[in-house]
Image 1 (cartoon, one colour):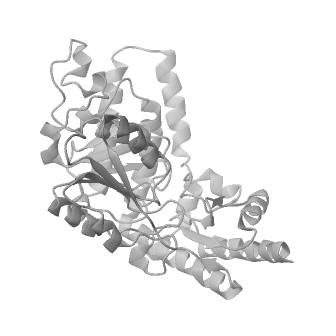
Image 2 (cartoon, rainbow, N blue to C red):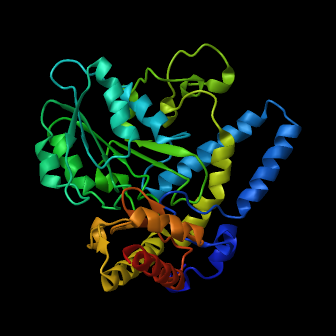
Length: 381
C-alpha cells in the first residue's frame, strides 16, 4: 500500500476509531474487527473441546512467531512467545551466570520499570546493576558506551524510550557490547510495528517486543534470540513447552533446538490468536509505508506544538524518534485527563504523549492539537 493511500479504507477495520480520536497506540493499539471472529472461533473450540486442539494452537502460535520474525528480519524458529516482557527477560536472565568479574548489567534510566526491577532481583545471584543517566529524555550514547567494559555480562536497553519516544542507536551500542565480550538485549516494545527493524543490521543478541501496542494485537510478547546463541542457553526459569518434544508428555531430557527453548509452561493461545489479524494488516501495508506516514503525522504534532509555544521533549531528528511525541508544560497531566474525557485519547507518563499510527489521519492530528491547545490555555489562565 502506498503512503498516499493511508489511512483510507483501513480505518473501517478498527471499530475503536469510530468512537473517539485515538492517538494512544504507544500504550495500547486499536484491535481490528477480525478479532471478534477469533473470539467466536475460540468459544466454539472450547465448547467442543478435544485435546488435539493443542496441536492446532501450537502450530498457529509458531506461525505467528515466524510472522514476527519476518517483520524484524529474523529467520524462522528464532522467536519465542510469552505473555509479556517480564517473563521473557526473567527467563533470559536465568540463562546467565553472574560470577567472577563479569557480572554487570548495564541499563539506562529511561527503561520501562520492569527492566531495573528484574535486574535488581537478580542481584541475589550476583548481578550488579549499572544505570547510565539520561539528559532531557535522551541517552548519551557515548556515556553508555563508556559504561560497558570487560566486567559487563549484558547490556539491556530500550530501542525506543516509552516516555519520550527517543530512539537509541542500538547498532552502535551492540558494537561496543560485543567488543567488550558482552551480550546485548533490547526492548523494542515502543518501536516494533512503527519503525523498521532488522535484527541482523542492529546486531543484537536478543530483541523483545509485544503485540498490544503498534502491532494491533493483544497481550502476546515475543523474544528474538540470535540463532548461534541458542545451543548455549539453558534457562533455569522454564516449563514443559521448552522441551524437545512437549506434546509427547514424557519426562523432558533436553531443551528444544530452536527459540522454543526460551518458552515456559502452558501458554495463553488466545492472546496470540487475537494478535494475528493485526500483524497481517500491518504487514499488508508494509512497515516502510507505516514509518513514512508516522513521521509525517509526528512532524505535524511537533509543528503545531511549536506554534503554540509548547515544549516538545521527543527528539526532532527522524532517525532519533519513534511513533510518539511527548510534550511538557505546566498542568500537562490535568490537560491529558480532560482531553481523554473529551474523546481525544492520549496518555501521560511524566509527559503528555500522543502516538498516531497508520490508521490515523492528519485531520485527527489537527483536531487533537486544537483541543490540546484550548485545554492548555484554560490550564494556564
